[in-house]
Image 1 (spheres, rainbow, N blue to C red):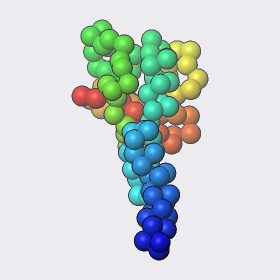
Image 2 (cartoon, rainbow, N blue to C red):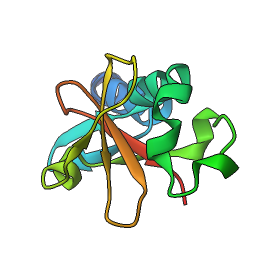
Image 3 (cartoon, rainbow, N blue to C red):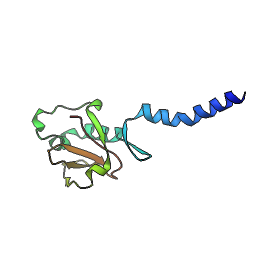
Length: 116
């Protein structure tokens, strides 16, 4: 009986961790995990506004799918200059030295870029 109760407690404690691991993809910073699925959805919905920032050759880019992105730590953009985009209000976007764009939510809690 005690073994069954301990097993139930462990399952209940592990449920939020399993849900986070399965339901979202993200990058961890210490004990905080910042998922970027909201940012990737915003990038896809604002694609024509941010397309020019996402690659050094935007003419070759096609509309991305969810799996075409990777999460980036918000700490990575702290030294980058923000780039202005036309019309969109949900994202802050940055360009790296090699011309690859990174977009973050307005509070800089999660960021994403196209996978290379």
